[in-house]
Picture 1 (cartoon, rainbow, N blue to C red):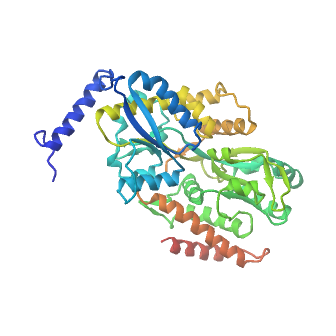
Picture 2: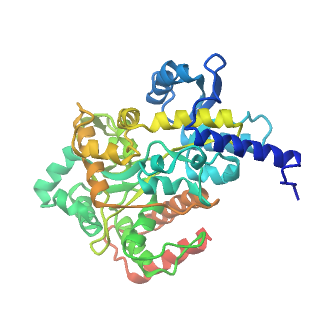
Picture 3: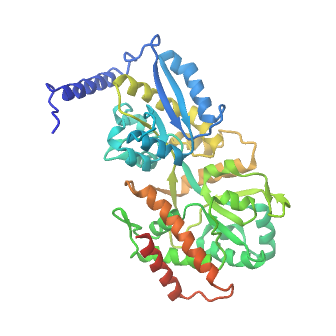
Length: 452
């Protein structure tokens, strides 16, 4: 067992570090740890666009020109990638795989990555962020980045799931079928619309869901069920069975798009009319639908909250990156805390998140969006998106998925396996085949056994 007494080398370092942190906090962090003549350099990996003039890179450059220069901090972006690649790069660096580089001082990632590299390796933001400052953040966003009472990921930008609709096609479909946008507020209405659309369109799917685990998890909880038992899925929960069976019935009838990839692609190729995905997906939509024969039609987006079952409560799943900092010297940790606080200040955070399709992380920022004080959008899609986000913040509760090491793999396996099983049975059924409760039960059992 390692010695933790002050007289031992390891214990002395820990004690000195603690004393420095406490002293810094007591004197209001008077910047005595920093020297503008000898700036501290912090490396950063992030996931917000690889282009040089991307929103995050632009923010970092502005920080370095202003607060960083004044206080003696230089933030150096050394890697930009997508969330999946950055996850594996961080894990490789943490586990010292051959060829992997060193861990950066700071990185923006998702909670699942924290468990993969070890939350104990990360700085506790509570050491550097007073409680009154933490209370400015939306509480569920802070909860998502908290492990064993330690805030290891500072909320930076959060995404919600929303329903994207190709209004160009939907308006024509609605006029001829009697379906309305109001019907899409519930899953009962969605599934009924999917049946009508399949017939109206000559056999096309009505919607696609980017993350099928979210559908089952969120709706089970919304109906009062328990989707998880510890770190395992609770297949015995009747609410879970209900929402899964309803989805399976629609999928086997052709109403659900079972292609791989994201709903943005399926919508832009005319494979489906609607898609449930992250608010950040708004960045990837083009203005046209291009069919396989290269004919095109306009793509005009309508954006609504994700449907809820009629008996369920309004619940939204949140996700998105947080800023993690590798434990280091008090000097580096203090410098990182200054950057984190600056990055999440409303005047900096709102322009950044609204340029990337994300949700701001502080309560006052959402009040600004509700009042439409900030920002002025020129795109109708963005206006619709942030109107929907603001309404969801006022009307929905936010669900924080559980944090455990295997969650990321479970999320991936659940979606892939469900799509494969639905596709297999869809191909084996005639279009007019009756889908019995017995068949749905059998498919559910196969899914459970395959996932285990």
